Every structure is written in C-alpha cells, then in structure tokens.
Amino acid sequence: MTIIYDAKIIEIGSDAQLFFSENMLILFNETALPELRDIAVVHEVSELKSNISIGDELQLAGEVYKVTGVGEKVNDTMRELGHCTIAFNGASVPELPGTLCVEAKPLPQIQVSNEVQIHAKKGT
Image (cartoon, rainbow, N blue to C red):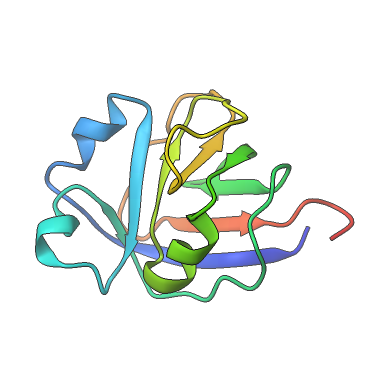
C-alpha cells in the first residue's frame, strides 16, 4: 500500500481524552491555534499526497483501521490544517463534513512520537 499521509504526533491536548471516551479523535497539525490544541492530537505538518478514500487504511500508534466513510471536507481540511475528526464507529456516512469514519475498534494508546499514517487501498 502507498503511504499518502505520514506525520509524527508532537502533542496531545489536555482535553483530547474527552473525545477519546466518545470513540473520537481530533487531529490538527502544529499550525493549530492554541485554543484548538487543547482538544486535539497535534502532529507535524505533512502533505496529503492524494485524496483519502473509503477502503484506505489509517495506521495510528501501531494499530490499523479501515476507512469506512469520508466527509466531503476531510481532504480539504487535511491539506490545509492536517485536520479531521476521526470517528471509530464504522459508519459509511459521516455525520459531519469534516469527519473521517474508520472501523469500530477500540482507540489505541496514543503517545507523543507515535505516527499517523494513511495508506491508499491496494490498486491505487
């Protein structure tokens, strides 16, 4: 599989755990405003090399999750701000345009220096 996004986590906001308990995670790159960093998993600036699609894989803290739904704004906000909300719910239709849905599995134990990668599905 081709890696289309690759960044290292550099900070975990003080309130990010509130979203973890709801099976959600908010990503922003290091350009995020201070008030957004509190709720986010912050990572290095990285380039999204091609659009994220259903069937791609998110690799986070060594765990792999199949992408099941991509909100209409996810690719734009990932390119601009390294931002999306990841819902670990297996939904095929995200509730909000900035949400990336992945298979319903428990969130991994996220730590600073973990990698966030997105791999394009086979054949792309």
